[in-house]
Image (cartoon, rainbow, N blue to C red; front, side, top):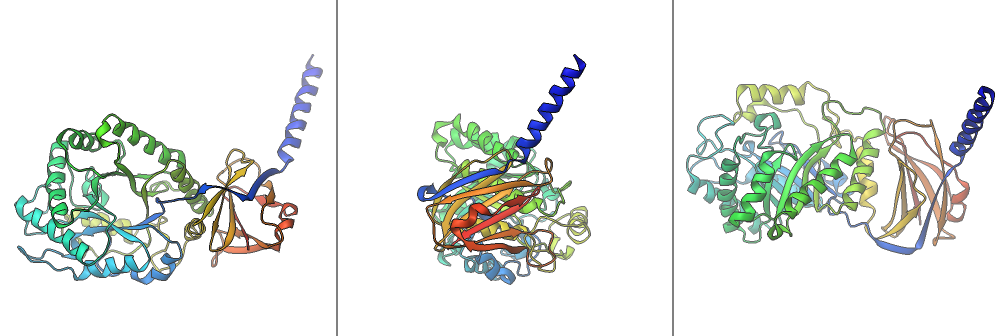
Length: 457
């Protein structure tokens, strides 16, 4: 009996090894469009780090990504309200014009605390000393942005108000009632300045913050305008990112009057505390997460963020001494991995992942044959056919062979490009050039976190 079982185990292992050795076959027919890769969630964000230009040095590079939106913190270092009924738009306008120059629309997270309205520095002080004056400030801000034709796509009330200075922002709400009051007065001012403004919140660090259900119930029962619901997540799990979308939809579904509320993940990235530092993880993670956003029909998202910057603690005099120390240590001392460009302006591999997604401007094509974490999307853009293949997997075989069956685009030049995240410069390289009819003969050998881009002229 033992000999028979031993032989059976060997037979099973042998069969499994043969099966594992079989290539994964992906097929796509470029003559049969299947909808579009409409990715309204293809947006970016810039951290609230400094009043010096953050977007302007990278306008050309960002334009290549074709972001729909770019999110900015309207932090106090912009000094838009230096005195009672006095406005200075100089610094903010410069950054907003830079966003528009990329082709994106700005979204603004209101994270300012003008000293004339908040004389004491304390993130637990959440209400201004004069709400009528606060409303006038919000009204003037929205009117100014409308007159300047900045086309603000969304106005978020606060930023991470569930954690305050730990999120780099000046307000920490401990009761839903306080946030809802602040929300009402803020959106009242914004909508007076621009009746078409899209307003929402609560822009929380945790999708399960009590402020979420508090705001939903408040807007549903009190009639306060809520055009979108927003939250953040930093996790290495694309499934967790997609899961929050379903969770928020379920919360909104309890109130039929909120059926048109959109969903906005206004900060997202991999885990900030324990990031996966495999060179290929982050670009692969971007592709996998963005695909899940598209499948879940997420309305907007802002990848956090565009550029790492050193901070000057003097810019953060609206924070406590502890808050300023935290900001300086986090941004000036701790290693940073989240941005598309590092503190010296060097491009990171994730930029290339967004570049590939930005190409998908036309029809989508179904890709058959995906297996497990071997994923692909296909579409049109700039007069070319595109197929992006990735392996979102940190375990399993050292290499998986992929074979392509491409139809509907015969007789054209094609190239296979590898995203080499470990390369010190230029993270893409052509690994094959030939006729599209021969793509089936070209084995794609994918290691964990590998990405391949196939372009057909």
